[in-house]
Length: 477
Ligand code: ADP
Ligand code: F6P
Image (cartoon, rainbow, N blue to C red; front, side):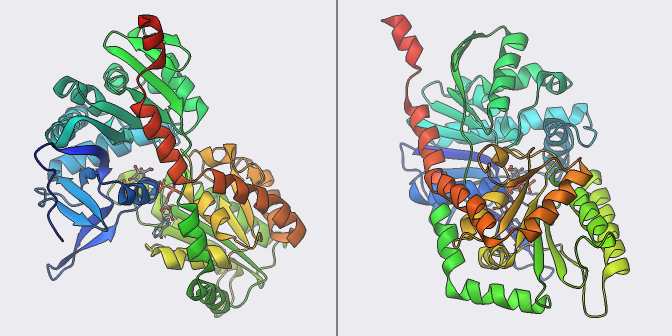
C-alpha cells in the first residue's frame, strides 16, 4: 500500500473513529493481512470516504504501536496505537463494559471502574492530538461514536479554527440512565465542544438537549444549544446504507446463483428464516431463538420444512458479557436442534463467522423471513440491507420496535421482542404472508431507502456542519 501524506497544509476532511475500516490480522505463522472491520459504522462510512479525499484516523485492531499511515481501497488511513492496557481499559472496559451497556438501556449491568475512565481520557486525548496535527486550517473534522465522546472538546482546545462534528451511532440514553456515569459532566462538555452533534433518533437528540440543560446549564433555542464555550447544534440524522451497491450486488447473477445453492444446501425448506448480527447481547438473539423453538414445538412452524440460519459475527470476545452470551446462545441452538432436527437436517444453522459482502447478499436473497429483534439498537443496518437486497419486492422483515430502523421501515412486521407471544405471531405471519402482502410492505420500504441512502445522510450532516450557526448571525445582525 502507498503512504498517504497530508501535504503541508493537512487534510480538509478528517474522520475519527475508534476503528479503521480494516483490522490487521496476524496468522500463527506471523503473516499479516488487512480484513474489513465489523459493524455498521464501517459499512456506512466506507463508501463515503471512498468519495472524499480526506483521511480516516482510527485503531488498526491489534494492541501495540501504530503502523505507518497507508492507503487502502482509496482511503487514506492514519492508525492510532493502543497498548494492551488501553485495549483492556479504554476499549473493552470504559467503552464496551460501561458505556455500551448503559447506552443500550442497561440490558446488561454496566461496570464502573476508575482506571478505565483515566484510560478513556488518555486515548481520547491521543485521537484529538492526531487530528490537530493532520487537519488543514478550517478543516471539517467528523468524530464518530461512543468511544470518542471527549474528543470534540479536547480538539476545540487545541484547534479552535476547525469545524467539528460528532455523530453517535448508538442510542443516547435518557437522563435517568446517563446520570449513573461518573464521567457524565465531562462527556456532555466533551460533546458540546462540537459545532454539530448528530443522533440516530429524535429520542437521543432530546435526551442530549435535556442533559445539556440540566448538567451544564445550557440554554436551548430550537436545535441550538448555547453554553459557556459557544453554540452547538444538536439534530437527528438517521444513518443508512449504500443502497445502489447493495441492489447491484443482489442482482449479480453469481449472487443469485449462490442464493439458490444455499437453499439447496439447506434442503430446500419451504421457509428460511435468517438472523445476521454481531454476537451481542443487545441484538435479542436469545429472544428470537426462544420464539423459534416454541413455534417448532407447537407445530406452528413445521420442523421438516423450516430452517433458521443465524449468522453471529464474533465480537468483543474477551469481555465477560459476550463470553456468557456465546455460551447461552450455543446451548440454545443445540437444544433446539437436539429436539427438532433429523439426521442430515438441522433446524438452526449457527454460523459464528465473518462473511464477505457477496455471501451476505446471497443469504439475504435466499431468506424468506429476516428476523431483526434487538432489545435496543441505534439503527440496525442489517434490516436496511435486507430491504435493499429484495429487488423483486418479495421477502418479509420482522423488526424490533427498539431498533432505530423501525422509525423508517414502518411496513415491517414490527415486534416488541420482550413480548414472546407477539414475536411468535409476527414470525408466523411473516412466514405465511403471500406475495401480495410481502410486496405491499416491501415496496414502500424500498422506495423510502432509495430516497434515504448513506450518501444523503453524509451530505445532510456535512452540509449542516459547514453552515455557521444560523441564530448567532441573526443575533449579531
Ligand atoms: P452493529 O453496528 O451493531 O454491528 P448493524 O446492523 O448496524 O449493527 O451493522 C452490522 C454490519 O455488519 C452490517 O453492515 C452487516 O452487513 C455487517 N455484518 C453482519 N454480519 C456479518 C458477517 N458475518 N460478516 C461480515 N459482515 C457482517
Ligand atoms: O455501530 C456500533 C459499533 O459499536 C461501532 O462503533 C463499532 O465499530 C462496531 O459496532 C463493531 O464493534 P467493535 O468495533 O467493538 O468490534
